[in-house]
Image 1 (cartoon, helix red, strand yellow):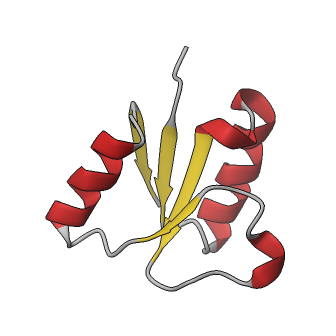
Image 2 (spheres, helix red, strand yellow):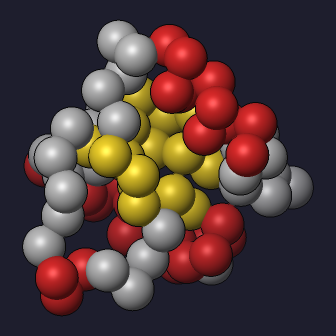
Length: 74
């Protein structure tokens, strides 16, 4: 079983639907969302990182710090 999943581009149509499905299957604490801008106040209950996937150093840092085992780019 995968412990921690990072979904990039999670604010789009596919990404947001994928996050919901993954959270149902693996739990909300095991699915981290990311996007290029901060999210709204009402969605701060779930793990989220501001991330531009072209910033490889920040991406690598997030993967290591949060022990990400699966990365889904939407």
